[in-house]
Amino acid sequence: MFKFLVNPNKFNKFADITLKPLVIITLLTLIAGLILVYFSPLDYQQGLTVKIMYIHVPSAWLALLTYAIMTIYSIIGLAFKIPFSFIINKAIAPIGAVFTILCLFSGSMWGKPMWGTWWVWDARLTSVAILFILYLLIIFLNHTFENREVREKTIAIFILIGSINLPIIKFSVDWWNTLHQPASISKLSSPSIDISMLQPLLVMTVAFSLVGLIIAILRIKAEILMRKNYL
Amino acid sequence: MSLRFQRLILILTTLVMLGAALLLILFNTKQNIVFFYTPSELIENKITSGVKVRIGGYVKKSSIKKKSINSYEFKITDNKNEMLVFYYGILPDLFREGQGTVIEGSIIDQNTVNASKVYAKHDENYMPASIKKELEKNNQWKKEYK
Image 1 (cartoon, helix red, strand yellow):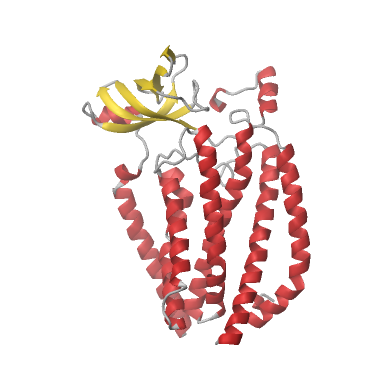
Image 2: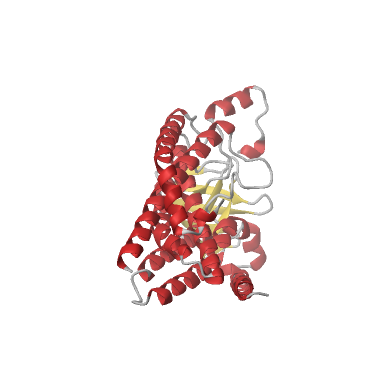
């Protein structure tokens, strides 16, 4: 049933069926999310600035998720020798990079009025900056090595080594003193964010994920086509 | 055991080992990674004057004094120890009494710091302003919300 996740032909068929409904659902979710954000309440401390969170947090989550997906596909690709996983690695790396830069940029815009600084070198901000550099290096590595197999293996190993950064990003706010606030939602006790703000945040997260998914499907399809025609 | 599972195990062990090595390094260089010290940590370590540090804590209630335009004096506390801070500059929006803050500056003596930068630290609580009013009305507003 999930063959389309490892087989290019099955993936193409799956993509052809799902792409159109997916675009419609994405548009609806995005519009709903933006309306919810518009009518979401102002924060008792931050006032209007809290709305940056609805861009910042989804893009941060998706930056991490994209890398996690690449890590899983690198393991599958290296261990089970499935070439499709390398196609996915190549296709989604720029998506992750864009989400990371969105996260860094929106965070910076929030940090200036709230913290009083655009940027500090605390553990959370630095580890996310490293994530962005990792994405850039992965994109650059895609343009090195004439030999495709060598290139893909190198990238997969690089992704695996870089994946150690993921738990560091997640737990940096708990392990060390940071200026960045600790997690509000993914913690053991109930989320310390009011339900009226959590709803728009979750809808925006779904919308961002769907936008990422659509771009990913298009890029993967293009990559499959290119390999069929030129290799 | 098939070859592919041998490879899988090899990859996973390598990852775990690498991760463990990196975490060991990170935890042993903690002093370079923590963004700030608390006043208690500073006083314990008996840091000499003139050293540049970042100190994090809460702004003590009713300790902010405005001496002249852009010149402030306040106390930063971690509920055990406190330090007096002198600062000349613009304070961020979220800087207020009882709120978390991080200051950067040089130590004058055991209990006083000359701050060159003041950051406001935001906690992980998000709440609509209207709810705060409701809570205050019903005396349900908890101190820890700040």
